[in-house]
Image (cartoon, rainbow, N blue to C red; front, side, top):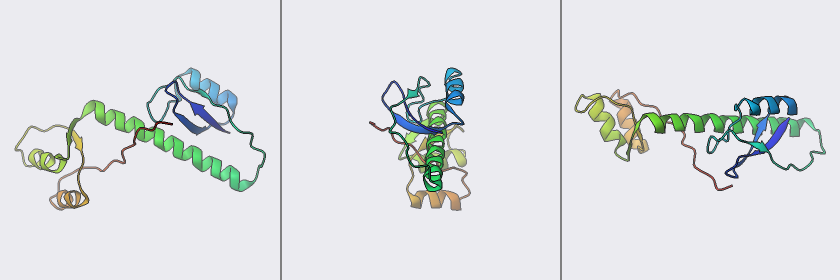
Length: 139
């Protein structure tokens, strides 16, 4: 079943659960989190009734729930990076080179790089990973 959920910060999102009982159990354990802010005090939001039960709609609901779960996982990964790495902003490529060539202490960093900078880093054999960064929403 797909549920519309809402956190105390008024972020709304969809998630897929076997049934209402499964949602309630996971929520009590704090295992359902807002993909935007990570708050685990989520509740079911008001939903419009789903009158049609066509296979296309069921597949669309499943895909939407999977997208919401992926967004939630990305938000968790983003929070981990923010909590454990140094933000270097648009100087990412320069800092990555300094670390790679031993010009500065080795540490975990994150920031922004242009496509050209990313290509150049890759060609130089500098190990990095591009992460799709989630943006806060006002919904």
